[in-house]
Length: 140
Image (cartoon, rainbow, N blue to C red; front, side, top):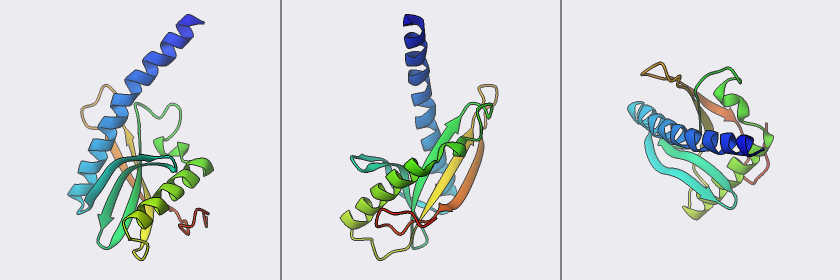
């Protein structure tokens, strides 16, 4: 039992730096494409959002998923209904807090596959992966 716990803890500690590196890489990727990053790692009781950016006049809430391989599926596969609800709630709080509810908003995913054996990871940017009415209820 102890070895399972130790392995779980080691995996969690090893994964965290990869996730942070993925978020930084995603931010650089978006900046190169003209986005302005306005917040990183927004965490609150209503949920979390990895990156918040502005693309033209649209507020973009970005979920970043980084994996070493696709053996367990595509990095974006973990965006489920619960994650959508949490992101929607957090986005609504952000928009209200900053007086941005009149601006268009969307939800993007940046999926990064970064095997240990390669220097440059594969980066995929999916725009508008789901729609929400930003009252806390998803539309699709």
